Image (cartoon, rainbow, N blue to C red):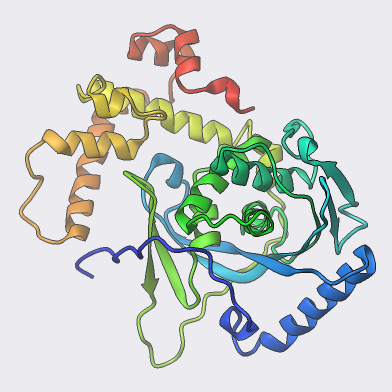
Length: 370
């Protein structure tokens, strides 16, 4: 491979009328029964059939773990397990939502005003519905829209690392924009879904939402985040026998919302501070590209460093340039941080940046997330 895949032009969310456009031939019969049962349960619950079904898949990542929030590209792919939301506009200002697993996820009803209020301290399943709802109207710059009835059926195992929460938020966004007659691009929806999920206290990077919205059947997806969100299908190479990816569920539940303060969100904050410190070490921290970035990520630092630096080699091709630049940045990072293998205390990080501990906290938006 001599270059990265070419990004697809901005696209609207597709509407399909055949399950074979979504699922493989071995799954169509099972999914047809599932969709029929969803519609029947909706009718029993709300008294009429749904207007449509919104769908968003989970994902598995192939290359690029925990680097999306650093601004670097990733290579995930959408998977068949998904979240479905059967929806019908109800002509009032109420949002009523049920789940096919009602014993675990009890029914909820909200006003439009209620949907715009999210208590991130509570691990409540309907908060993800609210996230998707808020995301759409943040994008539309308006305060809420039409009421609707919804019935959710999720087959992405919760806490399994397959992005069940992103699938829920993305499916909600697709449902809400259709109910309200909106028509955003896939890129707009993917970007706002990542921001919207932060309402529940998880500082998401964007990979999960992008592949859930923009994934294509039969392809992985090469996703770039900086300087803008771009995605390009990455077809698997032809083989004598079809290539198969096996996804094993260990049944170990890792809920990002629950563990965010000590795991996920902490790692995001650490990388943001690392980017600030590396930019200062390289002497580029005051350049506009770095000084005005909010947040500053390692990808922004790398791009700005090479914007003025001489070429790092004579190799041709985008992939070779990526490899050479990453290797160079690894050496620079080792020089910057190598003497502190055990890490930094808060006061040490602030001192290295020439700011107070309070100023550092404000700069990285520490209080925004638990």
